[in-house]
Image (cartoon, rainbow, N blue to C red; front, top):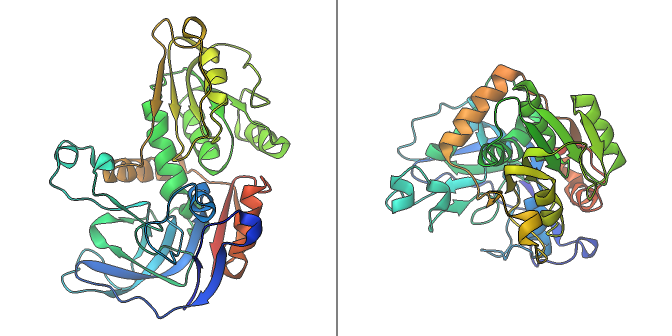
Length: 332
């Protein structure tokens, strides 16, 4: 099969993502194999390619927003039939025994495994997944639009919940890429006032098109105090900026898996009066199931930039250079 993999992490300009020919993977016990029909391009893939995330195996095939058709099942796998359309997301395994797993917080499992990091992902023509960590996709979601929902959507949704936005509240979104533009649609549909702060003029235009109440530069102040905010840009200097924008009692959730260093903060201006600063770590399967049902109900439609699998390296470079508005999706 055709695939791309990261042999040695390096700056994206040095082409760490390389095309390869690999044998079709065979599903093991409890696993299914899919013929990939779409795979989203996530900023986490970029962090892995450039070494911000330390690779956990050599020659990883990235990609964890995978839509595909089941074409083979391993021993004991019976949840899906050949021909079913399913989704493969970031979280692909947990121990099921630790206190985090036993209390519904499997995203914090110390033995968790992740698609495109611990095991090969969807920048390929086929991918394998444990069937218990795959998702049955609503028929209303086309392949290309469904792909970004499997990480950008699910993890963004968890970030929105972590931000504790009250009903009808004022939400600030910092950075406006794949995840943020999905979260904005959810928040607006649920009655929130959304203010988008991002450096990209194209992203600001998309935000207004989706119904944002205002847009501005990433380091600008929103037109009113915020009840909640989500930081999607992996830029630590924006943390104090967002914290100052919060009203008292507000919460900032940092959604990325990687963030540059946060500068010192002034307690009286940025933390006092019961403001909260929270991180977000992956997602649980319950998050995924809940979000995908909500996505179908709200008829979410991510803005996608479809690219052929053969141009995966260019798609990742364009993501690094902020040349993608919405979400890039690879199609074999």
